[in-house]
Image 1: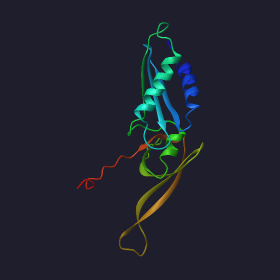
Image 2: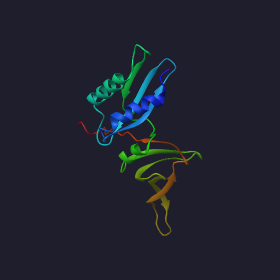
Image 3: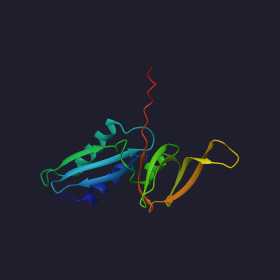
Image 4: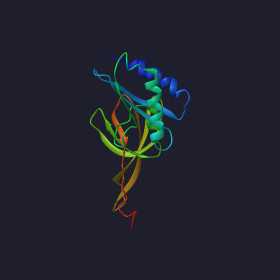
Length: 162
């Protein structure tokens, strides 16, 4: 069986030449089905990038020694973040955050560091002396240990193409 660590070493060699790309995940099944998830710092991962990565990995493996299948792609739009660079790529964007304590929020990702994230939500609260509730921004900080999952919020503007 091909080891995940071997694939990660091969990818590290490729990614050393492409600082705009980063590894999100590698999976290797018992049947040597290799799945590589790569992201790019700005924009979307291109088909050419996927092909180049696939060819590079294949050139470093010997099919005569061990047969394998290889899939290279980007993380899906609704896939939870797995690495810090995904959080950093999403700075300023709306994300859906699920906490291990059961909390579930939507808000804007304001900052991301090695320790965790800063998250801004809007809540409506009754303010003394006001008839209507006032929308207020609440800034919260969460460590990665507190986060169960975080993923981008996908919005489709129904009036955009009219």
